[in-house]
Length: 130
Image (tube, rainbow, N blue to C red; front, side):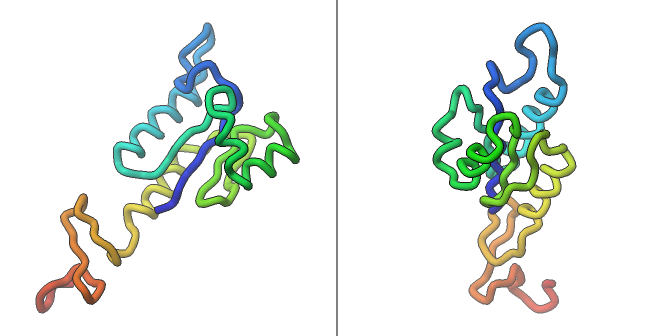
């Protein structure tokens, strides 16, 4: 399962609705992340103000912060690989990563889809199944 991590600048809230000016990109991102989490996708956001340890715990992020600093945030990392910097990932990108996870080969149990892999690694259990 791909692990999607979004590292953000110091924000007072993650929704974008605090303060006088609503940041629509944060509102959209918050909704997208929550939806994907409900689907079982491994996605998390880390705020520099409220979760600074996350920025030091990951070598990719630590190196990025050392070279670029917080002015390069937000940073999106998928499975330890930087995929975007300086802007939030689009809904299309996040859904694309999620679709790859949800369409993963059936080489393991997928009870949430009503499927079970057999010992042979296939979802089939009878003649003409697949």
